[in-house]
Image 1 (spheres, rainbow, N blue to C red):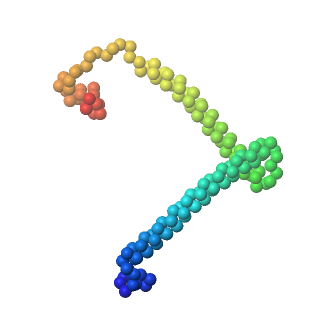
Image 2 (cartoon, rainbow, N blue to C red):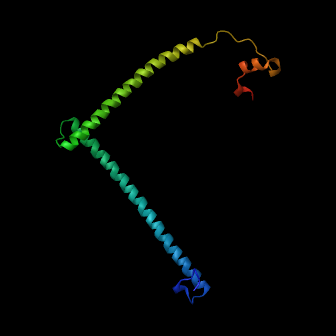
Length: 145
């Protein structure tokens, strides 16, 4: 018996062996495809379940806000969420405060950076400048212009 030959393949003609191999391959691919589809379905169902859990949590938190949650474990979780909400509100206030300050500073900077007069015409070619003047007037990133 050869290395790749199976006992059930002995005595079969080459065409029958090829057909058998293709049938097995087809069955394997079919099982793989069905398994992949079922795995995708499981993932979608888990996502739906997660969404329902989120909605349940929102409803419990709404009831907590109305003082209607009595379960101690849920009360503790809701208190944690309330603390996080408080921290979020503080950070949003800090953001607004920073935006308010930076907005005023930006206006001042823009006013200070304005140019009242048209600048004098500069050199038209790099031959008109020394190497040092070239570096001052045209930064290295502008040499390709």
